[in-house]
Length: 386
Image (cartoon, rainbow, N blue to C red; front, side, top):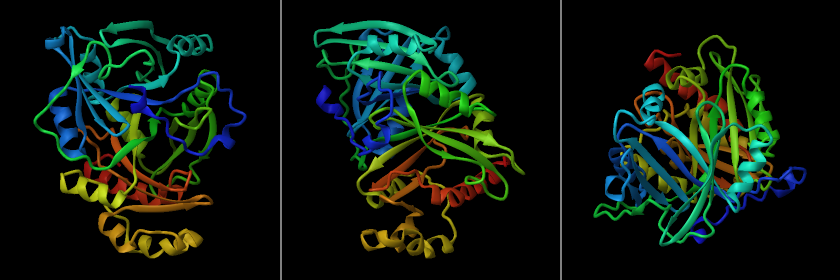
């Protein structure tokens, strides 16, 4: 199984030389969503995003209280979990938050050590280390809380050869739509409440040994109407990156405030999924019904050569094609990147996906912030939440 989860090398090691890496993280293991109907959610992500059926847990496997469908595309694994009766505490999460991310699972070599190191530094325990076994071996998992009701689960699977985890069986389906080229989780963004960003920055620094390697304030992230602040946290080897956003004072309600209102608390705002060919991926996603934020004005695309500067010499993508698909472009000293953001993926205006292709750039599209947030504001205006 471990060969399925090869670590992604971001080439950022020098940035993190001073990091206190007492918590070695090998990668993102899985992301678990609590949803109202796991079977239908899994079908949606298969159909729309090209995820493949992977594993299943439910009544047929002896699970009496909850059901989970696992889908996979390259190194990305998403788990959709629903309650099977009214007594399950999962119901409370869904009633309060709607469909959303509950668990961000982190692949580790030693789950017991990860739990001990983080809890002794102040993390609130979600579950103590526990062992699960079947005829394919054993796994060890343990969990801690982060912002809101979100959980980091440490997953140790070096002694397991099964499909996903003990208690699951392989999920085979006659319906296997073509993948859309999504490769791995590039980063995951959390939204927290007013004046809470620095608290959670300190949590990731002190409890998990992360470093803050990028910061954006409301002078950088603002429009005529709204603003926010953001700090990007990364673990010691640069493989896990968690930007954290909080609202900032402005004339109208920001996207962060809208999220907090409808999610009713802090939580995961979006998953950024990497691709090697964003034009092909986005074209396929649009053809399958995925809706993206509206495009920026013509002047945005007219200005791309000036914004990219020297990187235009190596840029492979046609600007007209990027404009047709509403893909955004930004650059830093290391290269350029291409990105696009979906509209919310459930009825509440909360969780969405970012599709990103890095062509050397290490940043997060700071040059696109104004165009992106103006697009979001146009959507907020239609919803009456701006």
